[in-house]
Length: 400
Image (cartoon, rainbow, N blue to C red; front, side, top):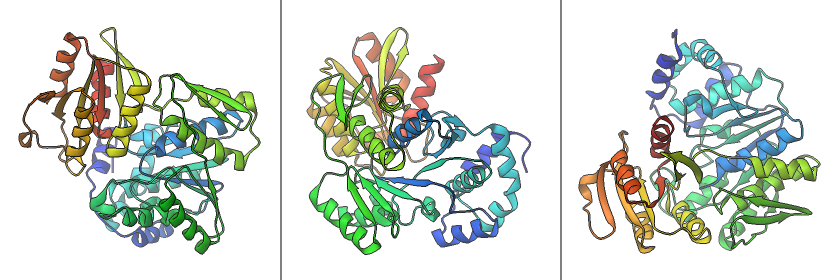
């Protein structure tokens, strides 16, 4: 049992157990935590899940609905994963649930993610919410959020990521992601690749689900102007990929509520999602940070930099070991960017000893050193890579 939130969160984050989704479902049932709650929406995909959740939440809030959201990982504090109308769960509530379920956590051997999902469901169950939007952790079929019974499921896109958990081929990953599609429900996707769409349609046919595909929308100039139905939007200080995420959120919202044009436009244009092409000020200089943690994410970041016509770019980059490091690095170097490769305090972070400085690639022991060097040389600084890395750098930037 815990008296303060710091000890409780340290305890939660130490839990690395692995259990089956059926074991987790049994735990929830024994705790009388409902997996079917009012208006649940399930969001999966390789990239853009959190942004889609945030846009959808913003739209629903603008129309007067009370909304709970669950996203991961966090960027600022652990509580960020569970939010009500964009406000994180309080330390008091988080501590209350940890102490309430402490014996269950110990006896059943729950993992950190299971604990978070359990607290989220228990918290949402206690509140009179209009909608509950829940992002998967990794994959779909075996993800612990897949215990829920949603009215809508959505997949942003499907690409190669987390192969060590999901499988080595794109077909393995498709099969895992589409596991969130439930019988006789609505399914929405902004995926554009024909082979993937065909497989998703097959699964919908098997499940009796109705599939809605968000048409691809091309933008080539900054600020990013786009339309949805009779509404026009302009996105500034965001990545180009957010156009697709916003249109997916708009499509889901349009199936749930009547969209007021003025409210919806304001909701989309004023929504922001920390760590996703976010601009911060460091010593009077604008610095962009973007959680491009896989190959598709790096490609989207490069596309944004090109459309925004950014020059003299220096990338400060770090990642987790299991990621496609070499391919991500090569994509950045091929664009002629100066790349500072660094590491951070995480047991899963890359081992710098495997890399050596050459050409535009510079190996730096700590991101703060890279930041100081790039700052002095007056580069346009972009910090990217693992969301865990982004979280630590963002904290450093906001405190210095």
